[in-house]
Image (cartoon, rainbow, N blue to C red; front, side, top):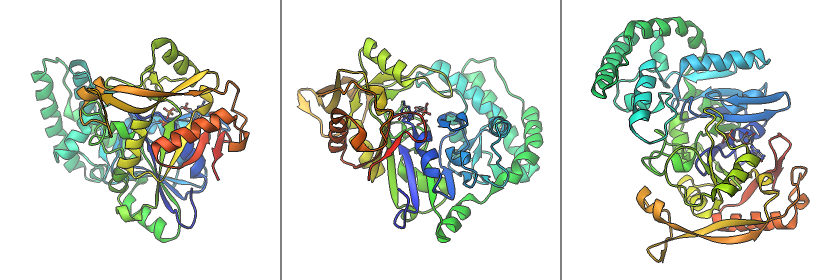
Length: 427
Ligand code: GDP
């Protein structure tokens, strides 16, 4: 994807997350000077099957596995400082060195223990399917203009004041919700005082770094987490995450202007999955869903939760093409479909006897839609060894052509396995 015309590339999930962004970012990062994560937090989990084993990355961009690529945690991320260091230590133990290569935006907000308490409480009372890692409450504090930013760690007196007010507010909310749990500001301040000397050496003005890299002719990859249908504005609200996962969020969350972005690659699975609650129009019957789940290893990288599985939904991907301005698609996990006789593909929805031209704006309607399927023949042979499109069975190519035409964006990559080399570049 990178070249003279594409120096700044956004990689986004074009379904409900878990599309295999980690693998694609890892593959493309080889050609990037900088990889920037622009939203979300430790609720994401990108799995990369690298030559020296499998790595699960939560907050650190998937580019970190390439020794010469610098990685940035952008201002749009809410950073959990404790788990960041667990991740850094685990990577170091496996020989991945990060000094001078990992940078954290001074403007990123911190996820604090009281955010996790509040999130756990809301997970108990609401049915949004949150991972209870404090992400939602940390974004609430950010937009409520009372959050603690990474750069604040340079000023202990500011941190102490913000944390005291935050803890008091959280305790009042916990009491109101009938929870007996409470948090103590002094413990949190002490924890941050201990972490600050470790975190501050990583801190930088990330937006400037991205701008300078682009100005110097370098290639920059902006890495999204979750997927378009979980975007706080464009997703299946309220069953969404708390940030802008779509490509527009990449500019804001990396600290650059939208005109700096040259291309947007949407990652889609060759079928559909979703974790947590909310509508999933093409959800398969349990026996077939179980087949997809087992063959595709569809269990959450962060939580271990089994994912709900279904067929490729062109309505969803077409919508993702529009709201992200996708210039290309990477279709992952084609190999997971290798054993099916027939593959239903949802081409449109019907509601109240009428065809819908687009996704409805509310979940009640999306729960009601009736997916209309076209059934494409399976190929019933392994695809994992394919390295070019021509190596794929004819029926697999017909399947890809079908989803490309329905989605309305060109396929640039096809994934046929977890390994780096199992990614076909469509030339
Ligand atoms: P992400 O959050 O979008 O990076 O996705 P996850 O890491 O949650 O899940 C993707 C999983 O699919 C990982 O275990 C990847 O190793 C795996 N994966 C990615 N691409 C392919 C592919 O083309 N085929 C197969 N079989 N697995 C893939």
